[in-house]
Length: 119
Image 1 (cartoon, rainbow, N blue to C red):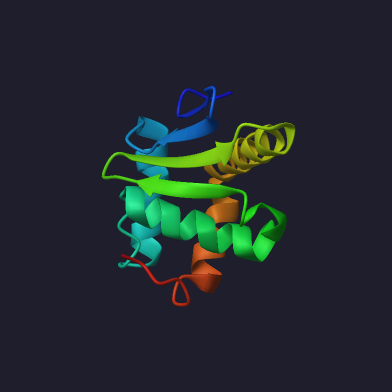
Image 2: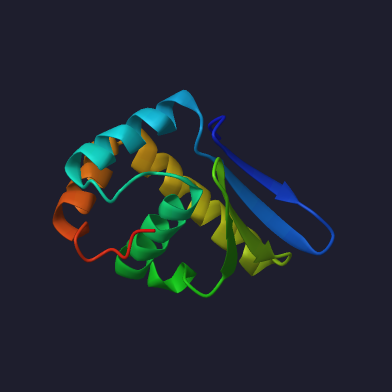
C-alpha cells in the first residue's frame, strides 16, 4: 500500500483514506487542472472524479461505500464485512493504479472532463 492510501478496520466499518495532499497526488492534481480548469483537485473534486470513474469502470463498487470528502482528504466508508473489505481493497488498488499510472487518469479527464460535475 502507498503512503497516500490507508485502509483502517473498525468494529462497525472499514475506512479508506486517500490523502490528497501528499506530494505525488498533488502533482497529479495539478496536471488534471491543466487539462480542465474546473478540476481543482480538492477532496470534494477527488470524490466527484472517483465516483465518475467508478461508474464508468467499476460499477460493482458504486453502492458499497459512503463518501466523506474534505479539503485535504477523501474518505470512503465501507461495511465491516468480507464484501466491504474486498470493495475497500479494490478501491484502494484502483486509486493507487490511477495515481501511479497518471497518464490513464489524464486520458480519462481529457475524454470525460466536460461531463464531470466538478465542485
